Image (tube, rainbow, N blue to C red):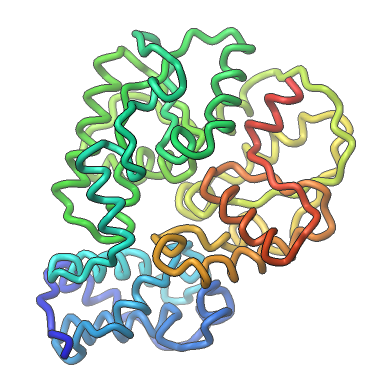
Length: 367
């Protein structure tokens, strides 16, 4: 029988949960609800469950844990919410309380154990610069690669390095460890998340870096939105699309119909919508068309919030739905390795013809 749990974190958000009017507007935008159809799997349902956990009226049983961990934390419900409830804060606080009570999903625990032991969720004993054949140095411009680009999507990391080199930048890879996003999204203990933050801040400042660029939307969101809540960030933070937006790029022609998918961490969480589109507009010959849901209303790819690892089938269903929206295009561009990977899973599921590519890889091929 499931236990009732102590909810230290949720108690700080009692007003948020009580502000929800149960209007159900969130049901029109939630990517998980579209595929599960259960009210417990949409924002208003998660508010009820979280409040019940806090009040010790609902035990932390399997159905409650599933509902709270099937949220991709895409934040579209917050955009749609008339009452402006901070849904993601409530969900992640509930997860912290669940983890504190010993309810951690095994897929998440494995990644966290690897981060604590090796500095990355994949369990590699090699550092990021070592993986990419780079020697860290002192430089004013630093590139924070991120675990996924370093250990899985190396083509994205290599394209970013290539772009910086072609533009004549004196830059360095930073002596990074995992940014902490994985830990924070799944509700891991705050002390360990802050420890990751401090390691990165110390390493970057030790290299004399004044501006850090990111090719991973999740890492960028952490440094821009989350790090300042806990530690001082004594350098400028830029997503690679913001950096490229400020440059005069000499690009070859690309005569294809393209569209753009906004990563949730870059868009709704960090507010970066224009820069990727400005960069795409610099490509000669490109035929750009938006998907029906774009920018602030962009649909989630289904890969965030720990959903991809814990509930791969649901994640794939969400991804397939998003890829269908790009059926008119030859190329679907995005600017996050998580999105690239998950959209490709959706592409395979529905056997779509569209090519999916990270913005930096396209730009590097044309620069």
